[in-house]
Length: 112
Length: 114
Figure 1 (cartoon, chains in turn purple, yellow):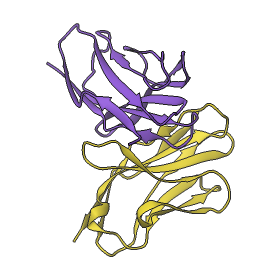
Figure 2 (tube, each protein chain N blue to C red; figure 1 turned 120 degrees about the horizontal axis):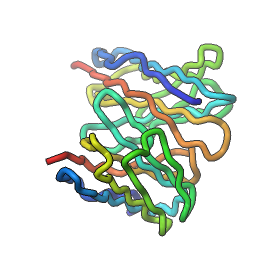
Figure 3 (spheres, chains in turn orange, purple; figure 1 turned 90 degrees about the vertical axis):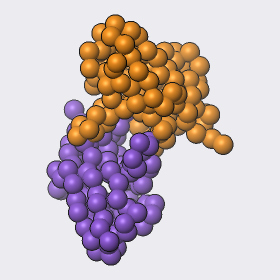
C-alpha cells in the first residue's frame, strides 16, 4: 500500500528539548517537503528536498533542521531554538519539485 | 515572489446549491495552480491542477476550477454542494520555473448545511 507515513501522530516537547518528526514514503518520489500548519495561517513551507543529500530552506526554516540521507526518508528536527513549535506538521512528497503533492496524515506537536 | 490569496475565511452554502471558493495568485510567468482539500486532523488530498490548456479544469468529487489569466484567479466551483463537501480548502501556486515548491493560501472553510 503506497503512501507517506508520519510518526508519531502526537508529540510533546519539553522546553529546551530537540524533537524529531519522522516521514517515510514508498512512492519512489524524488522530492519531499515539510509544511507547518497553524490555524488561520494555512500551510507554510519549512524545508524541501529535490533529491538525496540536498535540501532547501523554505519560508520559515529558522529553528528547524532536516536531513535526506535516503530517498524514502526526510526527518524534521524541531530544535530548542524554535520558540513557538506548537503546530500541525505535514510531510509531503512529489515525483519532482512543484508537481502534485501527496501528503501524510500529520504530526501534532505540543509544548509541555 | 509567488503568493496566493484566499479572500474568504469561510463560505457557507446550502446543500444542492452551487458553491464557489475564491483564489487569486501572483507569480512570475505562467503559473501552475492546484486545489487541495483537508478533512479534520488529516493530511491534504489533491483535487485538481491547472498547467496549460483549457481554462476549465475538472477534478475529483465533481469539483472544477476556472483559470482566468487577466484576473489572476483560479476559483473552485461545484454545481451542487453536498454536506460531505464540508472541509478546509487550499489553493496553491508555483512558478513555471522548474524546482519551485508549492506555496499555499491560508485556506477557506466550506460549510454545507442540509
